[in-house]
Length: 97
Length: 239
Ligand SMILES: [Zn+2]
Image (cartoon, rainbow over all chains, first blue to last red):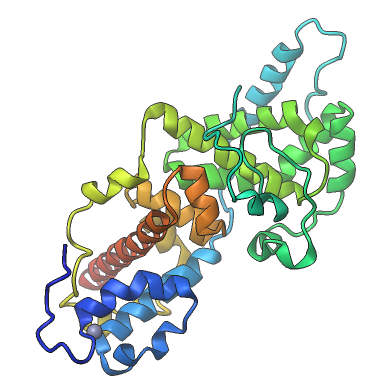
């Protein structure tokens, strides 16, 4: 798709070439911000910094959402009907202690 | 209910099993993870919980109260996972319910070879993926065509210093941006960056190639950057 684009100078890697390599670079575990191109290119260094930052922030996303109490009610009634008239008595309901 | 999303059972990914990550088919739990093979991020995210082992043992013996304890210990994590993968409260609640019902039916097969939470979360991921399969979306590979161009080639506007994100986004903004990702991107991003699954695991779960998983992840992060930057721009224009 973008392969032949911006290959004019041919010598040092340009932004297009670098950004094309970027997914692999990240996944290789290399220190991307130390890449030669990044050192000399403000655009790509900002990009790399942002992407690393996003990945780092994502790891900090905690489970902050709680399901509504209806979910547990539904689970209980489904379990009860699973058991039906089964000899095993169903799940104890509510909080008893 | 049959959990198998993908029945290719004899592939080299049994590596996963060694590391405590189990394929969906039979929720196999035979292999014991060795010290260095433990999935580090999963361990970090799944520290042992006080009272959990006892609750598991009792719930396995059919004690309903202990099952309720397990529910309270894990509901938030399972629900958050569903919500982030689906981006929809009603569906997330339905599938949380489904995941715990499956847990109820299968808890007897848990043998403690991996962390319980690792096992449960994988079960929940499978429930969500199965649901998405039934709905026929989002096929990760299709996402490439749904998302045109904008991530191809160099970005001319990137250098503006005032728009560098680093250090400036809060988690609420990130949550919101994740919600706004296209479904296929969101799946890979949540599984990899939030939940800590490896690309080979994701490829296996989604029946896509590892390369596809990597490229979806990259596109997801690029898209998030766009979303976050445009969010910032809006805030600035309001201020
Ligand atoms: Zn550049």
